[in-house]
Image (cartoon, rainbow, N blue to C red; front, side, top):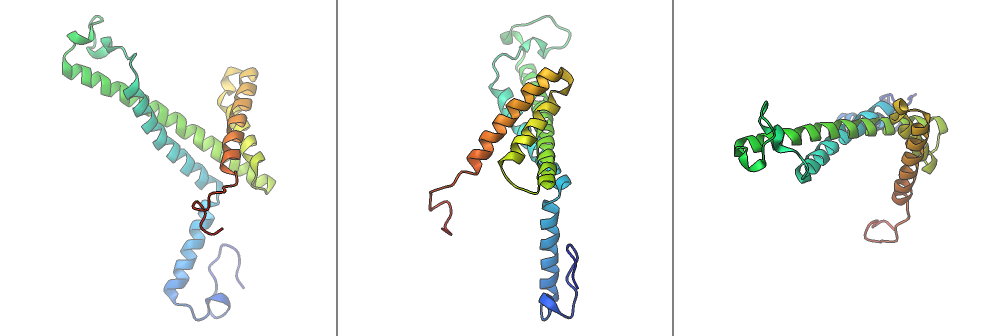
Length: 186
């Protein structure tokens, strides 16, 4: 007899006559699939991917920013014009600003990704369905949770905003595709 999540027993059933290496391979596949279905793993992956993407986004946005004051390039000095600051100090200040912006965006994106993914997984497990309502509810929870320190009105606005954005993205991602090249099995 075989139980869910346990390796198949030898001597009968589907594993009879299979190579031990194939059996081990099947066990690893099942283990990885069950890991990818667990909420903590989904939450950690979404948080990690959000952290990485947020870091890249922050780096890009800091490099495109034109309003960065260069007066802080030389500590303890009065505000100086950019032409009067040595090139090395300009580069150092620019990289420092890019690093701060990148780190800040990485933390925020990772936090949002983890909260959204974790709440969506819990809601999906509770409802037992995988539909648009899970993403909308998770978006509402995430928006409200992020605005919790600003008061109930901000929580309601955050809930509505994140829910609407999540609904729009999920609806687009679940749209039927008429492109035969996108799905060759049709």
